[in-house]
Image 1 (tube, rainbow, N blue to C red):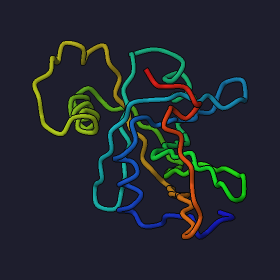
Image 2: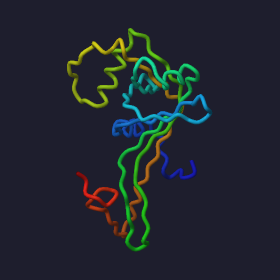
Image 3: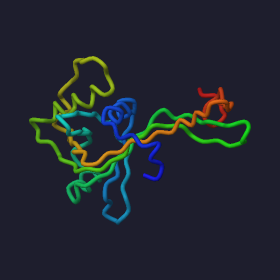
Image 4: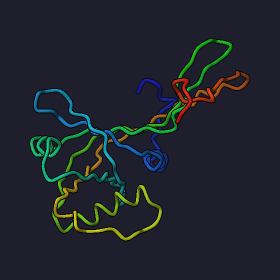
Length: 176
């Protein structure tokens, strides 16, 4: 990483970023030689030092075809977006926190599907809640065994400089 001052190497901080994210973007090796990138709901589980990311999908489709062909994947997630405009310099930047990494995807056997779905739901719901198991047979659950992971942040807080932040949405329009 060029900007080592922005790198996050602490595993607990990386996991905190993951916890704050709503979407994980996964890149698979496309059959046409281009990366196939897809935004996904996800869950995180840590077993000792090993981090696993859990996902779900239908029982067929392009994602699964690509995983069967080549189980290597990369992922990215980001949060805490903050548009920053510096009055004095008349410049702007974007604050954020992010995690990227690589690993190998494993499609889970039927007896592990419910556990994987519970890991996913824990990411979005603080408490356990009853849910129907009727769709489990038509759902594929898979996980990425994280082999490499790196975090990065940018907050660009400079003491003494004034910053302007729009009261409207990031694009200048009121959010509805």
